[in-house]
Image (cartoon, rainbow, N blue to C red; front, side):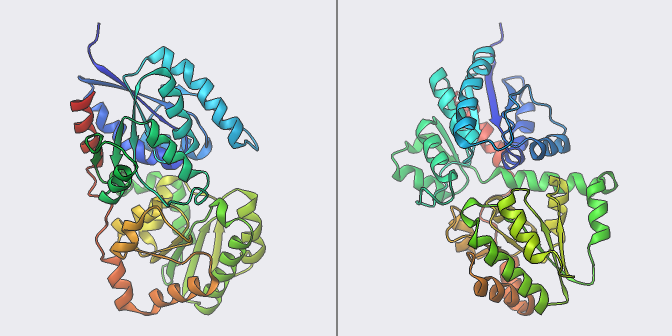
Length: 378
């Protein structure tokens, strides 16, 4: 009978997959002492599958839970109930979850009920506002309460956990696995660029004579007036800067798509495109001059590529980036979005200052630090 410890990694969304797959690939290298399997909830189906395909990873368990118009009540209960059968079949010693999704929170509850240990990757991020971002802030708080091991990306994250009463011996600062993924992905893309039709299509779209601004947006707290303001700001930037091309992969949620297409669809130097596969998005980030986003992961990734980031949120659970000077919070204030973007376009000193700041989120070795901790503690 095998004496190897058994690990189950569970994730359900594209951002989780991006940040967990580098850890899985490193765990495969120590298969002689740790057996690792992957379960996906498919909280996001198509976007999750794109990442799995890019990294050539096949889940061992696929709950396939995504449904049209799915609400948080149904998703949470479905995850808990279905995870019971996975846990009973595999009987893991450790369940690894990531970050702040409903998958992470619900899987942690299921693993707690089952009685196995829980490891929380990207632990300790906080805005201290339970409704922003919603439901992510409470998801990560609840996951922390249930977890045995906490893999914090930064010292600030570790400090947050200690203030909440978490034993410091159960916390390790690792950096963020998203940097592992980014550096790995850039090498994959560079080595075989012609393989990716999505990137080849983008190359045809982009005008190399113009400064590229990449925009992403999907946060619930920006629905309504927030997205209207964002679109008005982007329209003003485009009309006042004809030497700029704005590329906006538009989230499929109608709360995002409707105002974006209504306000921005007829502006010559704004290209509204479908959400992109992970490899295409990494390529776009690398080609951009400025990134405007409400995403959490982009705040971590872009500084490693030397790209200034304007964050369309009032608060962030990633204060390290603000302190390091790699991002600026602009919220959904039209004047602030326009003025900060314009400043970066015309003020070379300010642009260089932001683009050369040190990335506080790691060096690409986070996965190895997590594995070193696991091998000594389970």
